Image (cartoon, rainbow, N blue to C red; front, top):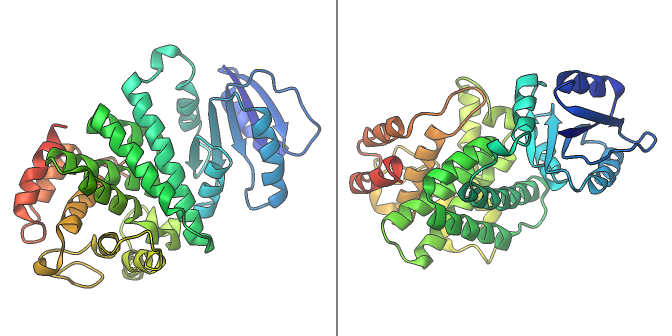
Length: 349
């Protein structure tokens, strides 16, 4: 499979080329140097500093010229929301954060090496919805981080696409697709949205209620756009000050969205209160049972379950069975009949 490498220095270029040859047919260029013959590129591997405006301008031209590339992998050292968001805005299909690891890069490229590894039709449907969902999340997080207007209609449209995918193909395909192709906060938001939708579908909720669920799920963690990624993705235990900072994200999200006329009061309530517990031990407002809406109760269960089963670079996902057992053990914090109703979603769908 032809792979084209784009880097902003000969040293970066050489390091990536050494990882890929002779397994792949490789061409390469230093960004901004003399034009090169790229040939029939099927995969593009990019490692450039996205803080430099001139790099972004030059990279756009390369991506347009390589539009037939089915895989566009960006390798990013900086753990910052804006770098990840910029990569996806430029057309990345996958962003690999952290140190350059040969096995990870080869695994991403090998997905295209043989038709035998091509996803099923159902997986392709889920993957298309996941791409739409992630683009909406990237747009939203970037807007919050930079103070730009938020495309609320785009986020709701993406939620609708996810709902259609799950209604047609099921939750299991969605979980598999998202955990395979997405990571970090975006993976979590996509998982929560899918789980919440399927929870509503399993209960036979009407379309209007499903729309409320996926809207709440898409927006619920938008406040994390203001939290440094090194804290969000920190391996190991958070310090007390880091935990305090993390716990500001529901209120931040609420403050960001409260002036948006397209966001209803019940969605704002879900954004602010999805970490509240029935016994009053949650945050940010320490609400008790009578003050927590049904929408928030369902979102909280979906949020916890998704967090337990998601892939993280520093830990393996919990099994769906173990995650549900943990939910059952949260006595007094979650509504017991709702947790019981969630069993089918957690274990069988």
